[in-house]
Image (cartoon, rainbow, N blue to C red):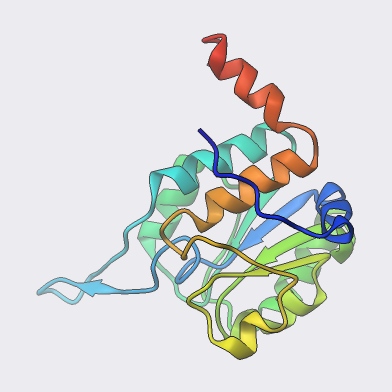
Length: 185
């Protein structure tokens, strides 16, 4: 069952209807932000399966997905590949220029982007995207610039909440549910 869509103002719902690209930070959004290191110094990340399935659903509905992250991680590369995410940008300190270039490549305007992040490198994309999103664990000065703060924490279903809300705003959620109810997926 999808998460209940948060109560959003009509202006925000209208802007969500225009979204053709969902761009996400990784650490703190797709993960809980914690890094685990093994004895060899290799880091590990945990991803929530609900978030992954939500990403697949929005892609199926025609919304492209991009990951723009400050760290470089083979685990993120594998996760993006497993989810069919074609737009992966790692080791990016200044995310807005990367997002702008991606929009240019995809022939989109920033107003057609929903961007979710949780820290200072995400502030400009949150502020400039058509829909800027953050998570409850982000510092208050980041959340203050977001159009919407998810109810769920990063790494604990925040991305699924975003995906389900996008699908609902774009009138695609019922069609997705029908596919599963009818056993076609």
